[in-house]
Length: 399
Image (cartoon, rainbow, N blue to C red):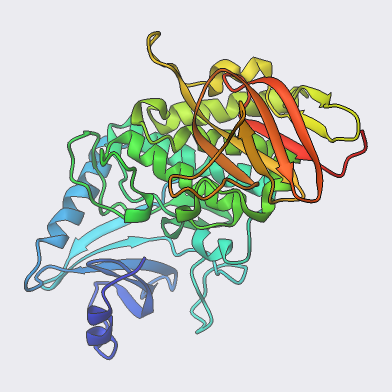
């Protein structure tokens, strides 16, 4: 969480708020309107995390009222607590504050939460500071995030602030947290949340949560910030070779479509797609189509499973040409891309250079040429982007 610098400075030397039955030890997180404290239960000695929101704040809306509405909605609609949602144990009020009590996150340095001065809550954001997780960890975290989010969507609610800072680790399990912006699923709800994870269309419904979850998974896969989407970064070779990372990357491409109708409709649909892709990977069918493209040039690997085409291909009206995003990955990097004789450029007229994702391409067969200044061109006819989402070239491979 991040908060107002003015509020942080003003409150830095203030005594802790009084909360019944709990001793507040020190702040461990800051939200837009509230602060999260590490606390100890006076009776049991157990450590808890406590979010404290002032009931009265000059010059602002009613932040405590918004939190109460969101938490009430959560209790009314979520009939069974999902293991990947952070548990709220108690909600209460004092004369000055609203507060609610939760599990503290694990220590970012490893191990359980503690009252030591070195304790920092383990969030996905803090873990990503050490670089992208392994493929298996990415898959595990993605499944846990989508599982928790799917339970909210199934109950008719949207989170509106899915981001790495709101993914906590408790007992080693990822749990989606911070329900202050939770509301009923409705495309007309307020555009509120964290700007970098909001979809361009501005509709804050379940598809907006899907878009944000896609960006969170993208950050796990690449180690890049959400603003870099759809660049692949230095992990591009792994994304090309590892079937788990490749499947997750295809999931991200669909979740983060600019057109909301081409995204997954909710987190359950996104999770089902991931399950189907994982089954194909386990069955040994994650990729097809190794081709040698002429003498003295490289191997062209088309990473697509025929059985998965229907899964990853968005449906468009018959009269409309379907458009798709396609990854291009080369070893070495910095190859330029030509499709049907035309070099591909970003909107600012900068040439696409690998690794990259070329967006909004017609979903039909194309003649593909990749050019690298130090190697012979790689050329292939009729790569059908209706079926292929990743094209990978190893310029150093023998013919």
